[in-house]
Image (cartoon, rainbow over all chains, first blue to last red; front, side, top):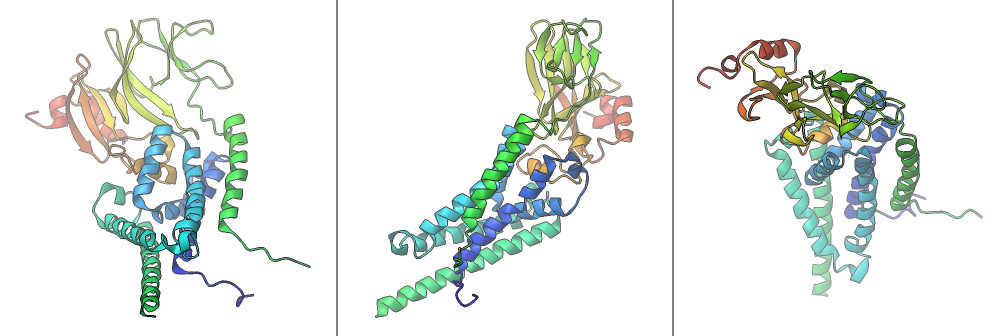
Length: 171
Length: 218
């Protein structure tokens, strides 16, 4: 079975990491709708929530926070995560995967854009901004490490793609 | 013969969205399981004859300012207005806190002023709590302060809420203390305080004059 499992590319692992990180905050809100006492204790669920938020792009989380403040609805926060993960998962098949649309012609420019955005996100996390002080150091480090891993995965994929292109042009 | 199905994360996410959407619609919207009621009471506003009425549990009455305490009295303006956490009546102008609830019941607080003749409401300061007056008569407004019911230390939704706010303090007792002239509604000065929400500092602000709070020369 393991031999038959398709080897995942760096991009596919990146999308999977994003989708798993999007699932982390859901259990907290889901539990809170049934038992508000969960707000009074710091436990596994609240830690998962904070970790999930720190692993997401910082600018998107600030936008989500703005939507939360404007709508005053925890449901908007809840549904953002799985919907965004689903949309990104479906878009990735079309844009990022080399077997996708237009014989993968969109894959290279799309991956380059993603690379630049992740690098900008990492730089933003290093700045001494108020938004970076809200979460504890542990979460900041974990979030930075996950995003750095995503950067490395995309960069390796892009490098491999360019090498393949160079080999094909030599032939 | 068993057929192998490939696990699809996208399909899993779609199932999560549909099933949780159904559950949350039933629990939060239909049955209102997360209702958070502050209190049930009427508070008279000075000698004006009007009362501030809080949301009544198991009642069809809305919170707001009413013409009296009885069920047949008229609602002049609806909204969750505060009285016990610091309200101030200056002539026909009533300064108070207005509480706004999120879906799961967290309360945020703005300072508003209501004209008791026209019942028009005007925002004085957003994300701020009115906590009485100081010795020289200015109103004490704690900007960025959060109600304890937010459980700021243990609640990750509160941290998410703060992420895009330039005012709300993620640290539990911190606030920027503004002094507001009740006659004009003007902000006459402010000072940042990491322990503004503690009992000791609240007593200090209520017992001190403007010069003592803001420092000499202000």
